[in-house]
Image (cartoon, rainbow, N blue to C red; front, side):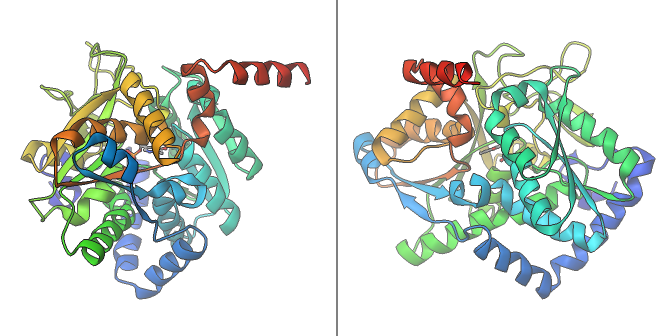
Length: 407
Ligand SMILES: Cc1ncc(COP(=O)(O)O)c(C=O)c1O
């Protein structure tokens, strides 16, 4: 076993033979780039001037006062280019794809944030671009689909299986198997076959590194709690990783509790006992929600970006070793937390990030004199249709009716 490809017993690279050379080449190019100052100079130049790094750390004075316990801060990844943390990884991998000499990018996306980020960089760098997206997600995240198409990407709605992210992932692998010579699979989260979990983590670690630096500069100490939502796990591992050795800093990942604890009604892989069973899917050994036959189980979440049966291998390892804790937030709590943030701080969060908010707001009252940093992984604009429906907004309904009638 190549220990470098694993986090404890989780990880590895389980792919068809035809993809092996691509993973080997990617590993080599990544190892070279990691040591290359020019690579990082270009990354940081674009992260600063094309995206908006460093993103601010916002103190939520009103909410902290209302909850009467911990001081709550938000790491503002919503202010990145295209409105989510996804761009950090997309930028890094697009620079790697250039070094690999690839002409085309493919990606899969749930919420569409990773898809939009990939489409922007493809437009900027001149890559051809194809995005796979479950047909259910195409319907519920239409604003992002609209922008991907306008940016010049081809969006393929995936009609197989449950028509969600897991089916889009399967379709992306199918494409890559036939196009690997010219195509880089720009994987969007800290999972998949090695070396992707490490690559995505390292590009996303800019989030935690900035939090660390800013906290030390302002308060001369580290935060007490870091809280992030966990889909595949990239925004959470990006925040956690620079703090792994600071064992006094508590790390909490929040998964999608969905509608109920029943299989198929949530996407809780680690935030329950026992964890989701171990399996090998999507190129790695990890913990996956599975049906009675050992197939990937259907999932549900109000947020497309957390609606996935698998989670990154490093999170399984952090859960197993006890370094990080994993919990769940339910759809109703998530909506309440999002409204609480909007109405008290004037910030519109993505539904994914609102899972982290829901948990932070739950624990804050009991944590007097402590500080909590929540990763606000994305902005809520993309979720306007879901918010409007869930909040039964009559004016929005009438607006849609009028738009429809004017077509
Ligand atoms: C805003 C936002 N946050 C979080 C996620 C979940 O992904 P990850 O766990 O890789 O951060 C997504 C996925 O689409 C997202 O769009």
